[in-house]
Image (tube, rainbow, N blue to C red):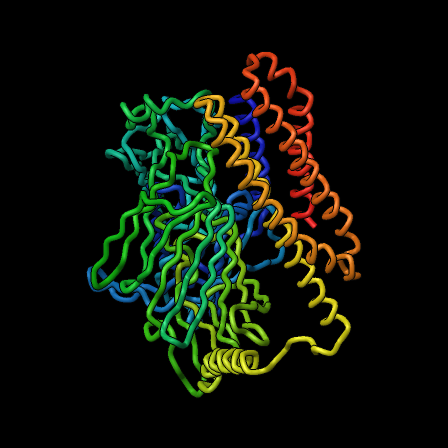
Length: 616
């Protein structure tokens, strides 16, 4: 693998050198002094260049060209230039200059050019000093590309030791700042020295245009390689006093891929050795008066976060559920509220939101960001002002108590770094009376609810008492009540049967025949009274058409109960007669055996019929 990578690097370098040698020379300007600093202390490569340019030509110059190799330009995330005014400690940076892609004639496609538009043309003999900052993402390539939990995380950075420019350079120097003093290897040019975690190249003098001297630095980097593959920020404005911000993150560790097994025990016992390449937390800097902060993922709320704040900022320390090694991913959501008057203002009859664009996370690289500004319902004539180019769309969001929906301004951008976390503005017109729409809808809804309740209570919604359906319902209610009375009488009969059986048990225990006969006489009287009560009820069911489907079962139930009475009386008479004749227990059981079997069967039939009638 190392051989293949090395061959590919040499091939890229050869193609770049051929392209540079074939490029024409722009000789109107001379760069009298160039000081470059490359900051590699984070995953973002930041190159700061102080350039002093002099016009050595006969005509004035209104722009200065920057040349960046195409291999680096594809990772360029941020580029800005400012004019430096004053000297020494009094030096200050002026306003940002316009920097835009350029396509000068005759230049090779292996180089990308950017034009810095000067505030005023540079006449012959005049000079200007510029401060140029370029930020590159994914420029620190893991080498090796896969490591275990215990391996050291090493990365490779490539650039040029000489300042690549279409203009001649009189004096230039380069300083590379690394996160740690451990350096595996680095390219040594003339006049190269190291000082701790810093490598210095130069100064080099009288460099011709397009001078290119490749350097490679292989060093240890254990800083957080947190890459947000996708970030969706939603900023919802409510003119009731709040700006709600919700951010959805899809985070991946962009360093060397983790291979082998992960040991939680090794990680907790020796985190600086067995987990040096992982990052354990992220830090987000929120506005000073952020409130109602939450942090959760698909599982639920995550309690491993800490918030601290002062009058200038609010910081939230976010710890994922597990440490992230190379290639590991996590997704979570953070949300917070902001005071409306701190971010929404009025100007020339319009309101405008003034808030930062990028992620509040420290030194995070965002591959793709989608920022949605949800305006209040009724907003119109909206426009956007951003300090850099973005893709703009519009959509509608429906929320609670909305009628037409809320307009949403959608801004998209790729390859975003913390330098993009600048303020942008969304202008819109909004009528304050529109704020009363939702409360009015709510009050109206509650009013109509109470009116409906009042009408419902005072209006008779029952069916007409002269209708056929109402009469049929009354007849069926009478049938149900009659059947319920019959069931109650049958249950009383069954209870009398139980008392008769109890008298037989007492007879076998005490031998008191007279008491048993008295119980029989009382049961006879009670059963006759219950039988009389049943007759009019059965007659009513027989004369009522709605009871036709249930009448056969009721009649069968009554017949079964009467048969059960007869069997019980026969059993009672046989046992009493046996006691009076002083027959043995065995002979008595034989005399009533057949009757007892029939009694058991009849009781089961009666129980089944009762359940069936209950279901009907």
